[in-house]
Amino acid sequence: MPMFILSVLAGAVCWVVAWKGPVLLKKLNTFVAPIFVIILIFLFAVVSMNYGWDTVLSAEPLAPFDDEWLNFLIAFELSMGAGFSWWPNMGGLAKLCKTTRAAYWPNVIGLVFAATLGTVMGVAASLLVSSPDPTAWMIPMGGLALGTAALILVIGADITACSVMLYNLGIGVKQVKSFLKLSWGKVTGLITIIAFVGMIWAEPLYDNFYIILGISSMSCAPIAMMQLVDYYAFRKKHISIRDAYNNSKSSKYYFWGGFNWVAIGVFAVSIVVYLLFFDPFTCVPQPLFKYCSATVAVCIFVAVAYYALGKLLLVKRGIGGFPDSAEKTDAATAGEK
Image 1 (cartoon, rainbow, N blue to C red):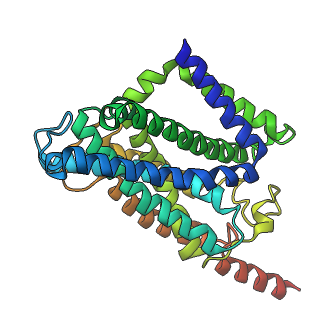
Image 2 (spheres, rainbow, N blue to C red):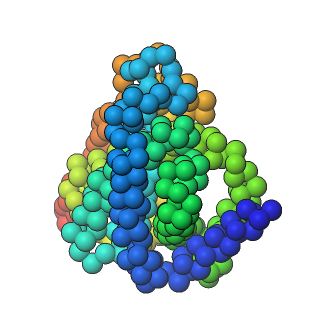
């Protein structure tokens, strides 16, 4: 019961932060970034002085398969899931920046370098204590005082991360017609209530976190690849902001009834392709997985399939507001006049 109450309080704080919007998020991130660095330095110092990196490298893996190559691929696969899960949040945060540089470099530094270093330190600590749970190794490794302080810092960082995700979810939900008239506070509050319900199964969710990572990779990787092909190959890095926020039939991006059915079709098939390589629900690799990661296979498939079908069914037919199709449409209109 005390744990549930604390979780509800943490969720309430996340809601307040998301409700207040970007200004409060910016202020919190000013503190969270240095906090994250402090935690990494703390872990590095503890591992180096109390254990030594030789001990880490010689530690037995947790619940491994018999095949070392398979162990590496599964770790790589789940890491891809962790990375791709931040793809939507990167877009939500980037829209708050005034320049491309301000949107790009913090993500590269934070999600590539800092997150990778943090993962390395987390893996090292997990191997030394034989548990992936930070609450199980912070205090044993750093002592009661330092370990407790580190845990408090981790909680602060998690609250900020959850606030960012809640903010981005709120923006997405507000695009749905049924929620347009609801206030920002009610929309984010509704999402928070759903999260509270999920807390009932907090332990099972944490114990099966690998499933969430696998599903993130399976769902986010194809979307990311289609966006890259769409933006760089088809749109030549040009987006009409006015049309992006126009939900009517007059928008360049209306496609068919407001849906890009080519993208939806490619996405649906990509799920099947992913499952041919890896089952994220049971963390069981298929025979093909030994030769290629499921996420890598899906990325290649989606890039090729969406480019080919997009060229044939979208660009050449003048659907979707692509530069080539827009020029042809303008030329045809001018000819009729």
